Image (cartoon, rainbow, N blue to C red; front, side, top):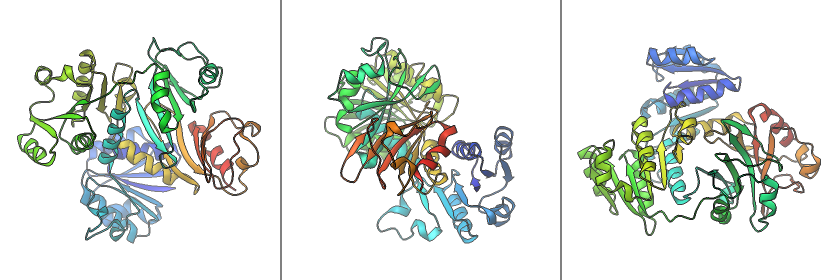
Length: 449
């Protein structure tokens, strides 16, 4: 697939990286030469210096032969115009990142289709939803929903005193038959494993568990995470993410939210918009000030300022003050792998929202969604089984599936089940598959006719 990426910032870089790893032809456009130089020296892609709204620049990038254009600059107008021009020049699929939902409002004058945009992505909104879910699920480091919310993927890091440490997975599952769950991924010492039943759990293992929503709380309790009621939350940063998180949490019964914003003008604006949120104008990087504002009394801290280093440091300080749950907005690739290892409970990245949607377009026609989570070097595909697909011919235990591939859950016409060896996938079923990068092609062959 030939792809043009407009914007070489953190999001654009990550999209280009994913596409290059998938052996696609990628050209990256940006107005900043130093940023393009970094892209060119780091990734196996072509680069073009210029504005993505220029027909000449797009032509130089090979737009007439492109299959996909992804516009992810920091300026909405540039993204919209780049997609519109690409659509007029015959590009089959266009994706635009926007910071406003104006194009998707019911009574909007202009819609995405008016610009020839196939998909509009709101990374800030997606990040805010993820943060809110993580606060609701106090013991989780990651939380993703599949099959229209009928199945959830739960990330949990094992403490040294967790009751399951030292136990093989098979024994853990057998001792709690009332809980419908399966451990589908494990990260140990920075390496991803697709675990078998004989895998013994160790302290600091990062587990990725597939279960039904009603079992999330008992499963986290089983893995050593207490059922903590998070009612007092401090949000640092009145960014779009921070404001959305504060609003969503304040709409939940029993939640008391305190939002810290350094800009007096922005703080006043948010105070008027968020009726049930206490908005304070102060410096979110000043730890002493935060302590005086009650940081040590909080159940959770959400740090989503534009300063990622500050987000990381503030979350670590909050853990030192025994705040139960900390969530930080981190996008730099160097920070995310170490964040949880040094004490951060959960890291959220805006760029992952774009990457997930682009991955979906890269996959075959039966792939409904594709997701990744921090630290897990595996892709999670939601895929529909085609009629007469090889995967529908036998129960899973008889299919001799390749290593590096694990069936997580199956949604039939009238039910959803966490997969076991006796599970039979039928034509048209939606299936959650955990797959290592080198086995993605094998998955597509198994589910295609």
